[in-house]
Amino acid sequence: MKKIVLSLAVISMLAFTACSDDDDNTPRNSNLTLNINGLENLGDDYVYEGWVIVNDSPVSTGTFSVNDSGILSKTTFSVERSSLEAALKFVLSIEPANDPDPAPANTKILAGGFSGNLANISSIGIVGDFSNAAGKYILATPTDGMNNNERSGIWFLDLASGTPATGLTLPTLSAGWKYEGWVVMNGMPISTGTFTDVAMADDNAATTNFKGDINNGPTFPGEDFIENAPTGLTFPTDLRGTTAVITVEPDPDNSPNPFTLKPLAHGVPADADDHVTFDMGAGPVSEISGTVTR
Image (cartoon, rainbow, N blue to C red; front, side):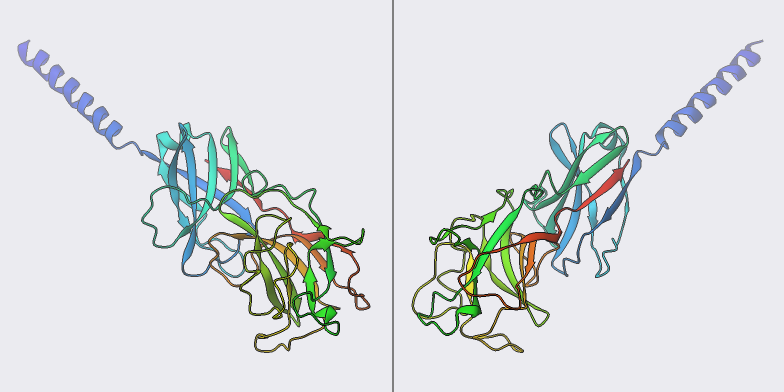
């Protein structure tokens, strides 16, 4: 009888041990899957990094890159299960490829809250809402003090009243982002400078090597293309028939080319007169969006 009782005890202990082992082997991670279109190649120095927000603290879900066709190098990430289940929000940021800082950078490009296991993410809530963006500009070259190159400069201002006034209607950007003006000449985008305030001169107003030698121009974003043309172009030039664009750029910016967010654009009319105010229209990309599934 004692042997039978002892055997039952041993079987019970083995069964308990087996259950404990099964519990220990239970996967502690779950998958998080991204479905995003519209991201661009950041080059070798920067990557995208996902984050889930748990109790107001960011938990990294991993990094990925994007090729020239906009395809993500990775779309599914293994994340600690309890963090993923407790997350209320997902955020995507742009980070240095070799980043010693464990916290997210200011340059956050997408965000959205979870509803069940799905989060709809967008640039609107984290970068800016460009649904009401509008712009005006003139052709003029105030920095050279001459009257024969007036179609070689562009200034994002409104001259309809006869007095220069703010020409751009754009939202204040979140930290980590700046606006940049461009003119596309012969298929080549040339920057007019970066700015954060539409009613002030852009950041390179006093240092640009394109402007004339008389002054720095009006206190609004813009550029005169008078000197030091890039290879393939000649300054002074004629901006009629080119395309004016306003983009939203990461700050710091890892690329000399326009970023994917382009809320305003306009083809400069082939018969445009200088010192006449032109209206810009909606640009090709004012929002990036996608979904996250856990």
